[in-house]
Image 1 (cartoon, rainbow, N blue to C red):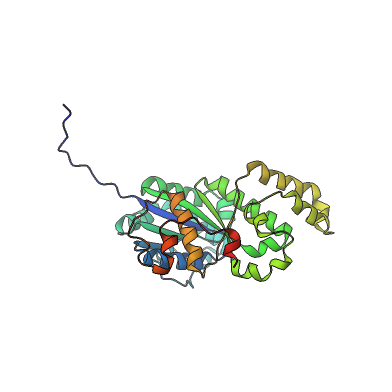
Image 2: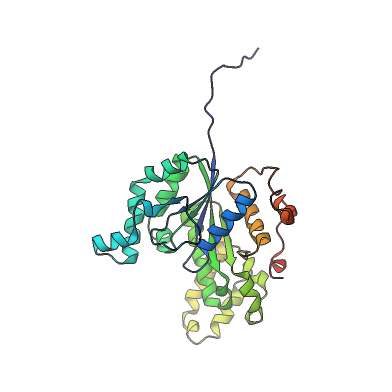
Length: 299
């Protein structure tokens, strides 16, 4: 007959984190602010972590701030570095002092963390420090992470810009190697310019046959000179077949609730039944109704 040991087992606390990436102007800081407010309304313990040492004018008050550890302007002055060089220095400094960040995370009574990361894409496309920082978070803090990658939806209006956005998203997915959600932000502005888009919105969110984009590029005198290069880039994107987008309006709670559900699925967060009672008007979304269609997002 099996016996039950009287030994006490240490409870392991699991944390869940969103890594908010994207080029400057995509809406990362606004997303962190709005998403943290939404999660608090749903009854979650949320901590917003600013990991951008150049971010000194935030629309939210960070619970953990890298600027308490190192400040970009001081690095520039002390080491005679420009902004990009100083940013790399700061990331390497954080990598060497990860105990500072991990101790703060473990010392907080929070479950959900939102990390506001720098907008310089070279940090995760060409440099190793950010990848090492994320690995340390995963390995040493029992945190389940997913990436939320933001792209400004105005890139849809230009075939060349959209291909660049696709390559950037694909690069991030392959380099970071974590569950990944790609968002097209500012969908309210996209609605105003839909008549200027050469294709329907599903073409951009589902990333359909990209050869049509090549036809658009061929009509431009400048981009047509790089026909083979454009064709090679499109071929790479289609061969991997990984990138799709979700439209989001950061000013609409319904839209953010759809993103919240995708994030929860990606990170493995266990949904709590009491959530959704805090926002009566969003009850159906909060209780797990499937996200609205992309066309409905533009209504």
